[in-house]
Image (cartoon, rainbow, N blue to C red):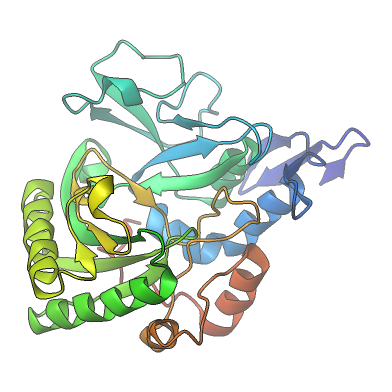
Length: 316
């Protein structure tokens, strides 16, 4: 690696040449975490992160001036993407024109030209764009092209103040019981923000419409069982003091923060896979379930990828 005094570096990753720029720029001012440290995190976590990204179109949430500055979601790969970065064309969903992304290229096309991140070089390229957050759908591209069936059903648990992580963990345990009784495996992770997300591997695979409808039914059933604590309707006035079970992210057009992705919070928190014992501790108020990037690297070194069973095997 060649490091220049200007905060740039020329690297070769898996045979691909990449110019890393503005490495000294602070992206998390409160934590004084620089772009170089963000790239380092993604390089270190790549072995466990990449299997969750491979084959899925990735929406990048970019913060060119750090988390205190403006951000934008980028769907289209754009002209700046190197030729070795894998892409996939996915038809736009009706009503999604406002989410076209800031790639410039192909904005008027019927398809979105998504990036797919399946190797360390592509991950470093995205991190160099200050793409702090990586968002993916609950499906992999079919045969490497177009939208495939859902291989994950997701429940996003979002607390309405004054509810917090304790309440999320309690609802997660109720939801897990219902899902296990129905024959599903359930894997929990933090959102990296306020709540939890539960991933349910689907075997056999389902259409996104089937998965979304099924998740909605389960969320409504839990709301009926615990109306004092749970809501499945998105209306904000219904959410105070309750945990929203957001089932809508199962829509083919929607995405969820990827496991091990950084979040754009004041400090570099991460969407972190956790154990059910940790969730029980969270419900008891004895575990905060808040992890920063350095915590996650230590966890991965000790635990490996405890989220490995989420979704269908990544294509090779």
